[in-house]
Image 1 (cartoon, rainbow, N blue to C red):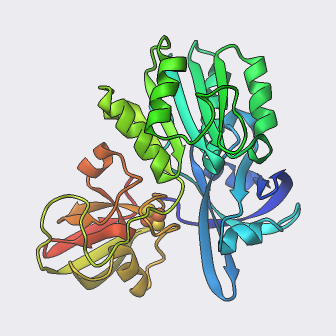
Image 2: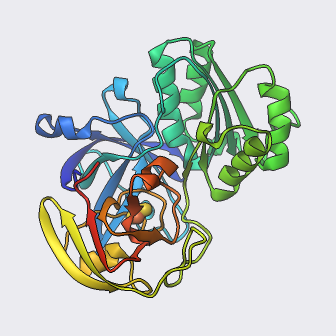
Length: 355
Ligand code: FES
C-alpha cells in the first residue's frame, strides 16, 4: 500500500459556491504513476494546524481522462481543515496521499446507471459520470442531485453543460428551499421521494446499478427503497460523506457475534516492517494501538467511512465496530478498517502491505 504523502503544489483554486472551493493539483512527473486514479476515488490531504496533524479525505471530482486531479472542499461547521482549505491559493503546497477508495465502477460494460447525490456528495459522482460519458459505450446515466437551491449547487454549470452535450445523461436537480422543476423534484430526498422519483423517471430505464453519495439518511433511503423493491444489494453502491451518527464505545461490534475477552498479541506489518504489541479485545482499536507502537499507519476519518486505514488480517481474527467503506467481498477476504477493528483471537497479524 502506498502510504507516503507527497508535497503537491496547488495549480488552481475555483470558488464553486459561497462555501465550497475546488482545488486542482499539479502532479510532478516523478509521482505521476502514484496519482493515476479511478473515477470515484479520493485523496487524503494533510496539514498541521495548532501543532495538530490534521488529515481529511476528499473525493476527486475530475475524471482520469481530463488530465487533472481536482477535489472540492465544502466548509463544514467546526471543520478545522475545511475552513483552512477555503483560503488556499494557487502556488500553495500541501501534503497529499495517493488516490484510494472503492467507490468506483464495478465493470466497464454497457449499463444503465442511476445516481443519487446530495451537496458535496456530487464530487465522486460527477467524476464517475464523466468517466461513463467519455467511455461512450452505450451506457446511460441518470442523476438526481439534492441541494437547498440552485445557487448552492456545486458544479451546476459543468453538470448542465454535460447534460446538454450528452443524450445519454439525464440530469435532475432536487431542491429543498426553492421550487424544483415539479413536485417530484421539490423537497428532501427521503424514501418516499425516491419512490416518487423511481415511478416518474426510472420506470422505463431498466436500471442496472445505483450509486449514492451524501449523508447517511440519503444512502439509507436509497438502499431501503431499492432493496425493498427487490434490487440485489450488490448492485447498490454508496459512499458516506459524513461521519456516522452512531457513537462507538469500547468494542462494540457491527456483526452480532459476542466479543470474547481476549488479550491478544498483535503484529502489524507496514512497508515490510513489523510492530508487535499486546491489545485487549475490549480496548483501543488496532490503528490507535499501532500508532502508540510508533507504526506510521495511514488514516484519515477514524470513523469507518474513508477506507484509508484498510489492512488485511493474515492470521487470527479481528472484528469491526463500524464499516461504511469495505465491500462484503473484502470483509470475506479478511480486510478490516483498522480504526474500527479489535483482535478477538490470541494472535492476530495485520498487514497494510496486502491489496
Ligand atoms: S481512517 Fe477512515 S475508515 Fe479508518
